[in-house]
Length: 318
Image (cartoon, rainbow, N blue to C red; front, top):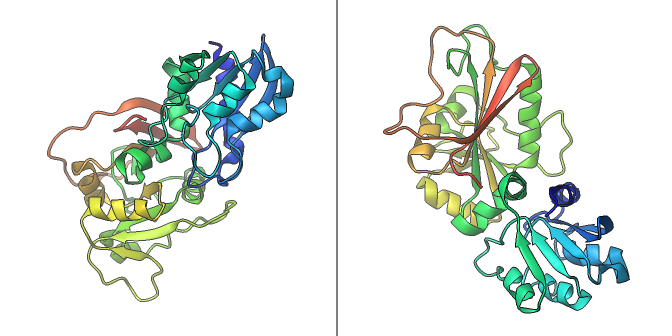
């Protein structure tokens, strides 16, 4: 397997970002020898899937070729015919999938292809993780029946979530990235403590926005006069399941230490984004209001953003 072809399929998949919901983004390339002869991606919900798009671009060159696709070809008949059947009909020689389809009703495509005499391979290692990571929200939505939850927090170098002499902990670049994150997520949430203290808007501002996220407050009301947030006062897991049933696949949690700890205690956080500013607060609340047990993070990585550093880690690796 050549990882560069799957890497190209990942790039192609991103062209469907924002237009395939609630379907995942998927990319595919058709390779004859060492040459890409067809490329495709899932562009619109209800439209052709990536494999069908790539096969159409390859035409007769698809026969005997290998198809690299970021997600296992579907074996079910939904709004479009199954991609496994299209690959069999095109008489491709092999299919390399970046990941198995975790949907309980849609998997089995590789098995169908293998039964038809097509050589199949499942990616491993870093490239496989990148394929899963690309659709981590959708994977959680279809397997856990709740949104994928990212906890975002800004802290000083000594771990405080507020500065005594400033409204902001992080810098301008970090705050712009947060607005980009809001624009890319289905819902943004805080707790009622944050609502009473700041009365936040939680919308995406100063960045390109196709669709504003739903803006939520978890906890007991009432909301302040003029607040445009949705109040969610029930059990956290049940509230997340209700949001998922309403096609909310991703939730950016911007709540304070109490709400963040509650989500973590109930194992409802999937990823952490910690923006660390080069400041010392000296006093104040930490990023969590206490946990009953340590939580290990996987795939920890960091990068500079302006004067800050953003650290990312997974509680639940996709």
